[in-house]
Image (cartoon, rainbow, N blue to C red):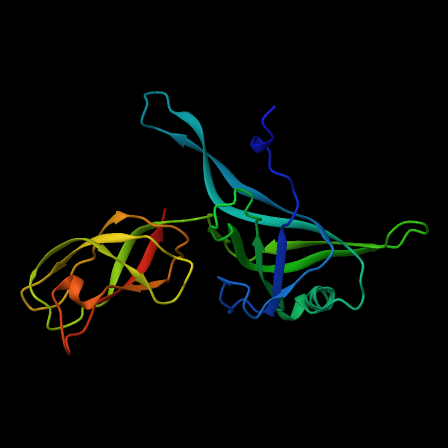
Length: 249
């Protein structure tokens, strides 16, 4: 049996920081604290469904319409009262009524020796059902739920660029179409390998989004990419265009 067909549930990491409903969803572990001794952090999604009648057919028929989605992350960990992550969790649970929640990010281990950035999910969640099990003779454990506030973000392992938007069109460039231009990532050193066809307008700048040729790997939404000045007909004091990753594949 091919062992590569299975994924062992080891090496997952859950990172958190205190926040509010106005906080941004994290896109990296920067500023977050890792929850240690974690042994479960599975995401369970749920959909709100309403029955509707479709009158496109003569008699009409009932169909299910999804009106909303929610998620819960059921977690458990070995109890360590000196762990910083444990303190954050307990504080968020105690102060949830006043609007305190957690910014969270869960990383999936990379197991294929690809060198890719890890897949990760991230979002905002309130802490509920915080419980300690201190049965004599057993390892003391903590269980809790992260109840999502809004949708979570998902970044697949090794994601490539799907679309770009123009952040700055540059200036002084030679009008022409430039094919298969290498994109240089200025915000995420892990994102590499993407190329695009770029059109410089008669005004000497880029006014329309490039067309992706090679998607590359390890890019994230919000990454800002640029190009070598000479690759788009520029030189000297001319200004290179910059683009923002709008969607990933």
